[in-house]
Structures are given as structure tokens and as C-alpha cells.
Length: 133
Image 1: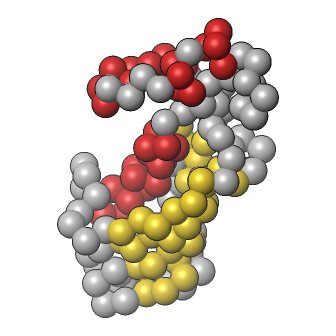
Image 2: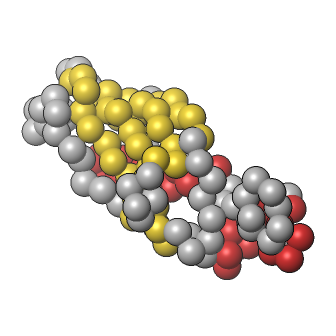
């Protein structure tokens, strides 16, 4: 990847995802993860911690993957791309999440970015670092 067009402190293009129960259910069909946390709307309604279903963790990361592909000019993140993350808050149906990637280090062949996936109120749901090659 050509890193010449980026500088430390640059914010990369943000990507957004509207999370719906239909999206969560479709993802469950694809990956086979039918955990109650994700698909049992009635059963999770009164859950003391979440108060409803939550998205699969990989759904939460989708805006970052889209942002990486935009920067790389690819359909899929290229080999050598690394993501180190921590989940901070659940993502629920009805939320809109977006990626925030800020370049913290620039190498000849990659960018190291601070990563935040935030909800529509700018509350962090996922934080970490990304190396984009």
C-alpha cells in the first residue's frame, strides 16, 4: 500500500452501518451462531445486562473493514492487515455504528491507526488498533 498520501494525525474516511435485528438474524444464518444473545428477541427483552439482543462481535467490526478496503482500494482487507480490539459496549438493533481511524504511525508499507467504533451518540463500542498494509 502506498502510504505517501497519509500523515500522522490524519483521520481516514469513516464508514457507517445501521444495525437491525434482520441483519443480526441474517448473519446468524451465515455463520451458524444462533446464541440467544443475538436472536431471541422475546427472551432477551428483560435481560438485566443488555435489555435486548446484541449484534455478533464481527458485525460490530464491519465499518472498520469497509474503511480499510476503501483506503486499500480493495474488496477485502489485504494480507498482513491486523486488528487488535476490545469490546467496550454492546451494539443493539436500532443503533448506527461508524468507524473512526486516526493514523498514529506511518511506515513505508503500512499505517498504524487508533480505531474506535462508535454509536450514533459517539459512545465507543469497540476500541483498538489497526495495521493497514
